[in-house]
Length: 624
Image (cartoon, rainbow, N blue to C red):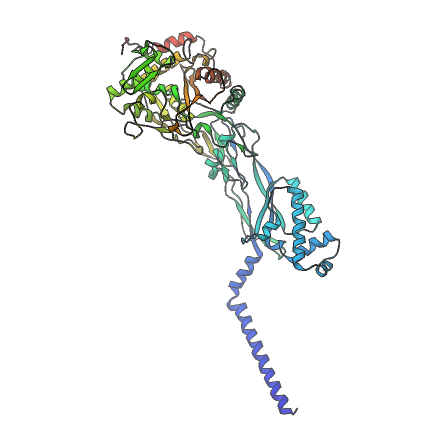
């Protein structure tokens, strides 16, 4: 080969190399100068990870400062999906399991087999520590979702999590981290469970107070940004930014846990005795509308999530029966249409009119207004409601029903409250029998809370108060955020009418009254019994034979009411299925224990007090 040919070839190679290196130089300049910020940002995102720092959920207390919930520090097991399929991570675990070196693993098995062996090892460890709980590696790897981190298991206690972490380390199983978290704990299982509600696996409030005040209780999670190597080892914490968590606010309820325990115990004894489908109770301060106790059965276990979650006294609707008769009498008293001594002929327990038939549980001839309530006469109550409609206008009775709060939610700070149902003369469901049916507590759906609230309006002199269960909300530092103030919704009846109603209600809870079993030694009790046939699940299918919803509502001391409440028993298994024989004794049991618990002294001369109450209104008797 001549020198000229060599020169040409050398020149061509040199030019080629110059062009290649020039192109590379241009690319380097483009990467390092022109596109530096964008590529640097991408690289930074690959290295930096934001880790969230959980906020401490606010605590819940009763009115006396007794803690009702706790926060427990736990750990979550988190899998890094990227590292679970990293061949280097997989080889290390397989090498430890086989007792050979990583290089020998690489020579002996192909990459697919190595990954399959790693999955089997990791899942075996998860089964060993978690049993059937948690997510498995095989599912994480097969998951098509682009998630870098997958929570395998939540809320492990520290000891279990540390044992698990140590075992993973010893067996060379990488790709897992253990992150601090918090779990809600309820130290008093079975107490106020449905009212408190619970939190889910992510510590979000579900049901009850936990859900209704979740925003205040949850707080705000913090975060920190850390730099990690390709194998997820932390290099430098806080390199970018960090923000500490803000703990949630603490909540103080109006609930009196001493009274709550009395109510819960009484309901449980009733369940053991009567085996009802369900039973519920609400007790309030009639002057302020504060809920002092609320309970029901079937109960709910906040740890296992077994049982009935809904709060029966606010979520369940039922036909109240005779307890609803207080509305008709209160309205007639308020309109000055009747007095306590006004007399009505009750047709000896059987009354017929075109398209209407009514009966009483006993044969009554003439009854005063007070006796109509104390003997729970359906016929007498209908005549009072009819007189109200005839004298004060069609729809007057319906207006009082709504003024007492029926047909709308009370607005209490709890979840899933029902509004109930009220049929009015303008509604399609109204018929010739509707007035009589509603007057005696049918064709109307209520909640136990609505009934307790309406009774409280009578007890406090005629004002409907908003039921409330939150007394205070304050920051972790103790700064007051919210303080309960009693909220008067409206005046429903006059003070004079309320006084006459109290008089009539004390006659119910006296010898000869349907509620005599609700009497409490040393106190004057005002109350009303209720017995209603249990409707079939489809209301248009009528009622079950021999099945009833029985209730009793009352307040005491009658001369200065401090406690008002209601007991509702759904389908008791008892030979005598009346509100006066099933629900009234439960009320008496609770009230007897509640008075000393609340520091309320007994009335020294109950008979004289009853007479004084009855002397408030003196008018001549009138017959209708």
